[in-house]
Length: 90
Figure 1: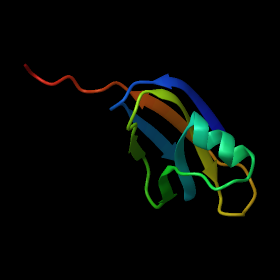
Figure 2 (figure 1 turned 45 degrees about the vertical axis):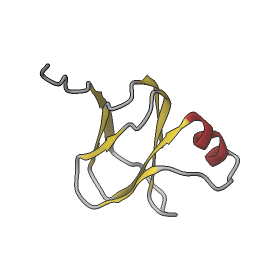
Figure 3 (figure 1 turned 120 degrees about the vertical axis):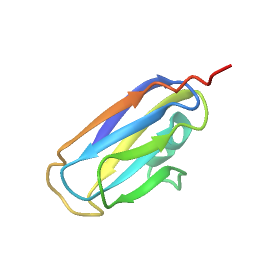
Figure 4 (figure 1 turned 45 degrees about the horizontal axis):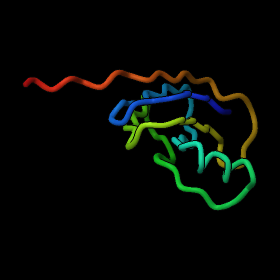
């Protein structure tokens, strides 16, 4: 399952809610293209044991969330939200 988050600001948090255990990966556009070509890629995240999974976006750009069942098949009941960055007090 894939979620296209579009342009996301650096420091934003991506909240992924799952109904079952799954692999959760946050990829930038470059690594998502490598993932699609079945090449080595870098991602933030991994096997999710509990929900929600909170992932911090390290840099501004186009981001994707990929969910999979580690080789298993079937639907993944999930939702993804991009949370705004907290503003620091000046």
